[in-house]
Image 1 (tube, helix red, strand yellow):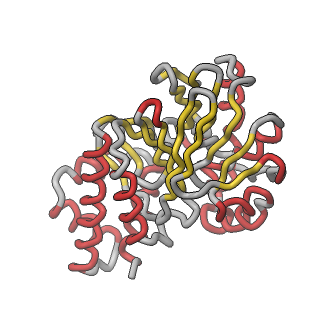
Image 2 (tube, helix red, strand yellow):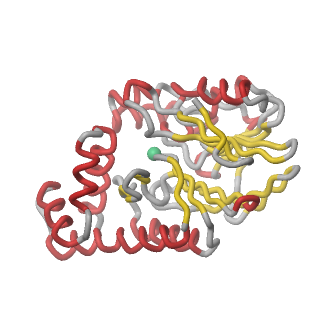
Length: 294
Ligand SMILES: [Zn+2]
C-alpha cells in the first residue's frame, strides 16, 4: 500500500502484517525523471516497495537507495532491493558499509537483541560492493531535479544519517528524532540502549539548524512545523533525562509514574500506546535506555 503525500513524496506502508500496521513507513522521492528511496523497511517488506515502484511506474526512475541506518526495521531490505535492481546504488554511512556487504554480524546481534521480532523482519541479503557508496556529513547530492543533503546524526546508532530533501524543505529523520504518534501529535523517544544521549541531543540540534518545514518519520508518518517539533522533542528528552537523574527510579513503572507527574499529557500518550504492543515495547526500551545511561 502506498500513497502520494505530495507531488514528490510517496509514502509506502512497510509494516510486516504480523506486528500490525502503521509502524514502519518508507519513502520514494521523485522529481522530473529522478527518484530515490529513503528507507526500505525490513527485508520482509521489500515487496511493498517493489510493488510501489512498479505500480507508480518508477522502477526506471529510482536510482538511489538511502537507509537512515541499518537496524532491521529501517535498512534490512536494502540488499533485497539492490539485488533486484542492479542499476540502483545504495548510499550508506561509512560505519554501516561493512554490515550491508556482510550482514551476518548484524543478524546475529538482531537475533540476540530482538529475538522473535528479528525473525519477523527477516535476515537482510548482502549488498554487492559495486552497488554501494558511503556518505559523509553534509554531503550534498544533486541528481536530475532532486537535491538532498545527508546529515550524520549519531546517538540512536553510531551510523545514523538523516536525509534533508531540499526540494520540499523536508527532513527524513529515521530514528534520530523519536517515533511520531500522528493521531496525538506526540512523540515516543527512540533512546534504546546503548543510547549515546549527548550525541543524540547534539544530532537533534544539528537538524534544527536546517530549519525544516516537515518531518517524515519512519515510525510513522509526517508532521509540519518541523523546527518547533524538533525543539520540543529536544526539551522532552532532556526532561526525561532530568527525571531519571533526579529520582533514580528503580523500575520502569516507577519511572513512568514520575514522568506522568512531571510532564503534561504523558498519561494520554501512555494510554494510547498501551493497546499497541510494538510502541509499548519501544517506549519501555527507550525509557530503559535513559535510565541506564551514565
Ligand atoms: Zn526503528
